[in-house]
Image: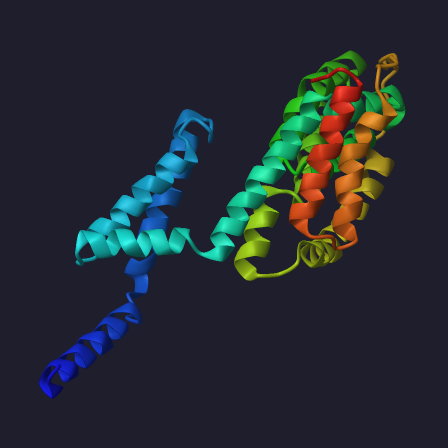
Length: 286
């Protein structure tokens, strides 16, 4: 190869590096803005943020990104695939799958129902809002989903609130805030997984940092509910004993304890799935 050809290849390589390092400014976030606008706009229009599948909206953002920048289609696809193959992205996807598997298996064997029934069986009518806040917080923290906690508790909580003539707005606020509080601290929440993997930090460290921020607000909320949130109406609901199994609550406790001890998240979730599955076989749930 002649000196001229080598020099030409060298300058071509340098130009490619310069193109990769080029700062596109505002245009670099346009595909992300497209995703956010469609997601929020669709959710507000349909009054349901799950009507439009998020993977489909993300695909629209990818198409916009490919159309915006001038380059051979093969280069665009290769760049996209390299990004998908990043170890941090693959790690996050695998954790999502394991967390989803654990949540599904635990729900199917009755862990969620046992936690809900345990809390409602020991509820004190005069402290109904406080119990709902605590129960929603724990269930969301253990399961890693605020929406799932609201779905599990919502119908029962509304029915009990109507029976006792308790302020429905107050009870709803306790349910929503408790679910959001628990989800914010959860070690297997999708937002926690995304944040820790993208920032390359440990999940238990993120939870400790969140505790310092969110726990004072939760304590203040409990104090306010204790003082002003008592059920003072003469009509109170009758506490009904609901069936629950102590051992069916333990899969969530196991995952929380293992995570707090800093065990690898893959091992933690795999052990949780295996343990929940064995409980399901033992109790004939699967």
